[in-house]
Picture 1: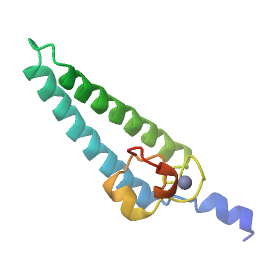
Picture 2: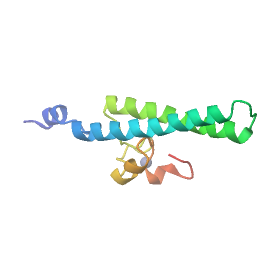
Picture 3: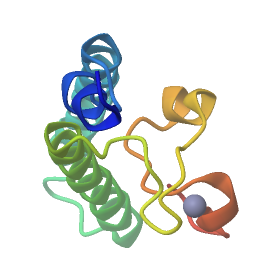
Picture 4: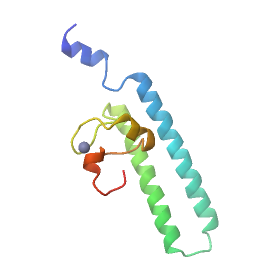
Length: 110
Ligand SMILES: [Zn+2]
């Protein structure tokens, strides 16, 4: 088997790893949706800047989770968007939707 054929039959992210990543992302999304619902329910009458900031932060994470799902489909999940190196597995366990490795993350979350 040539190197190219191996690359085609064994994608970088193996099926089981992809399933694990999906499971973590589903869990992260479910948690954020519950938080968002709780904020919406308690914040209906309040015009609270902190609450609105929290909601923005949750919606931003939900967007990042969607993007991570797209990267699983594209086969690029787990690669740093800045340096293209694999993000360590233990980081992906904590932040399954992260876009960057620790080195490229700088001071930003995710
Ligand atoms: Zn990086």
